[in-house]
Image (cartoon, rainbow, N blue to C red):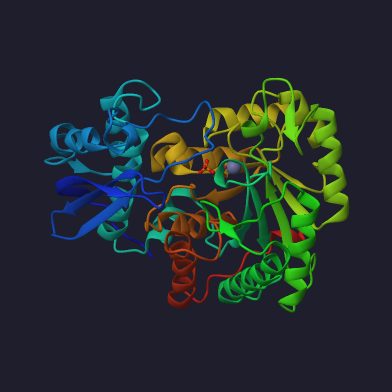
Length: 427
Ligand code: PGA
Ligand code: ZN
């Protein structure tokens, strides 16, 4: 659809403190446009964060264990609203640039990436509205991409920093690559999740869940987890490797001591851990491994690319932190072949677009991602569709803040049935 862009005017920009899915305070921002329409954006929060992520603004002190965001709420009222109202904005780039300059530190150490991302997401929605096009279409216009429904990667077993069990690896994910469409994929995810619950209950009795809604069985054995997931896929009437592939997020920063990796109660070398990944990839239909090594252990990343990079997606999260320059450097060093994309890691939607453009330029795949601390904001669903990444992870197919994203995808499919389901795995 052709649209004219005669600029966006904002009447107000306000913020409030809400709770995220972990019960921690976070920021929700509301912008009202000059025609009276209002749009919101909220900030998620990570637990296993990369060293180079943009900074969050938190109150400190004793309330909420120091995690309050009332200073950010005040900052929006005192500085962001005066900055953004009373001007005509032609692009989101201009607004995000103004936030970046207001901050002045290059990593949002002053106004906080939580402030920036919530404002930026709300303004992205306002721009789509002002141009009278759906958000995913506005995003694809910005990026020059073809929108497509992503394959959801459901995080069905949680470990690492997201669960109180012995699993070193943080996420065990199922990806219904052989689904007909997103509704079919969501159904597969939910049925596998239900079958897995039954399998794990009969094996472990009581069963907790982790931060992202995946089960947290009391084990430290990845093979046991993967075998149980394989059985659950079959129990749901599906075929592992055909309809459904597996993925891992090791989040290896969280079990690295500067030299060794802690696995099954023992300290292991990067070579031992690499041998473990090679073994797992040979025995299970694992198509993607995220953060296999610590972000500083770049030789080990290079080695896994040599061993598995032609068959397996080696996906950088903490090592790239959605930063275009870090993605470019990673491609040059050949330490990965894909980048995870989380808007709050870098701060604004504009910088997220830069990371996506750079990834495309260097031939990396991308996966759009939620955070372990989430809200009901569904921006990342529209982002995944509009950017045409073909991949999203938003947690288990359970718990409100997780299913909000999957339900949004299903809704977009109903509204825009011409959007195809991603087919990248047939490459
Ligand atoms: P985080 O975890 O949101 O706690 O960083 C998600 C991930 O590591 O992918
Ligand atoms: Zn990760």
